[in-house]
Image 1 (cartoon, rainbow, N blue to C red):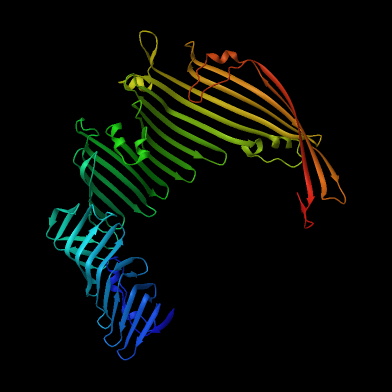
Image 2 (image 1 turned 90 degrees about the vertical axis):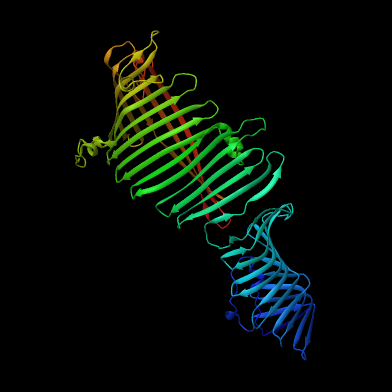
Length: 593
């Protein structure tokens, strides 16, 4: 193959305009930036022509033209390709039969050009440059059909404004080569950036929907932070569908999206038309450096509307979930509020759950105040509502006695053993309510107990307090034995028990003692890959005692207010653990454990 370098300025602007990419600024092209190859190269010095024959190609940076033959006339400053021509501009391919290019005026004509850009296919009888970044296409066709026979838009003349728009005058829509719609002119945006405008619809036919026109859409941008797509499908046999989809985002502040469908639709021809709809959205926003808000909605008119979706995952959905969540957290304080809705589409059960939560913590303790409100709505039975309003927990973390009561012990003091005594406390107050009925009054919801004629409750409420104290002592005795003793005490106060006694009190306690140690033995080996072996024996013995508290079965258990009602028990357990650890000499004489 022959190879030569020539000093010419060759521009491919007419070949890339249909691909809607940026044109090349010829003023920036160096004189020696063009190279060419061919199976046979003929130099006609008399006529100042260079002819490239068979597998001819001209390259310029990341663009090229390939053709069966190319003739370059240095005297007239023209270049002509013959036969099927292939042009590439670095990102898009365009094909044509003949290329004429004037190297002086930088004008050119492409015959029978065709290319693809994004989801569209373009072709034209001839393409020529009018002025900088403006081109004309004669007898132009545009389609999004990959076959190109089902439908296309035809115009005697397309004017292309590079990286801006395409204007057709007039414009005719063909379906199966039959004209169905004509407009005096139309504009198609080709900007790389987002911009508002209409999108090209997709006509067609199938046995279920009949003739249809789908994705007749309008895209609308809202500044730099959001956009929305409004689209419609019109089906001859099944009805129409309107969709609205949008998204928005402002970095570090908020983001979200929404999607809605409105259908006047029937799935079978014998069905009546029915209005159905869906609405889904998500929104998350940072309200301040310490607070956030999250919102999710998921609603439908009926379960059947999900079956019309093109998404398989949506068609299989069995529940809907919506919620509103607010969180505030600053230093040692935290507050959250949530409102949750869930619908079971199979059983048609609606569940509502609301929660308010506040917490405050210090280095030694934590306070929680919260309320829960839950309602289940059933289609064929009475609704049930449960609530914890209010509930309070207070916890003192485990600390040694000197740390908890803030006093210092002198070293070697006879009270030094107090450092080994640890104390923790947990307290809880709760009001619990359970209500059956579709229309309870405020008294039944918040405090009043009511029963029906059979003695079954309609509404019942319980109030209770629970105290839990744990004391432990950990020390080493005889230097080698580890002693761990613990004692736990629980006490509850309730407004009444199962025997209807008012203001009742109950308690329980248990103790546990553990004794453990470790025995080590080390064995060394010479002239062996096994350097040393350590054997660790860990015996454990424990004793647990729990008195008889079966009398506590008269107390209610609710919202964490409970107490042991087990019979008396005493258990003793013993365990022995053996552990082997080895040091091994590796190939590089390094010791591995």
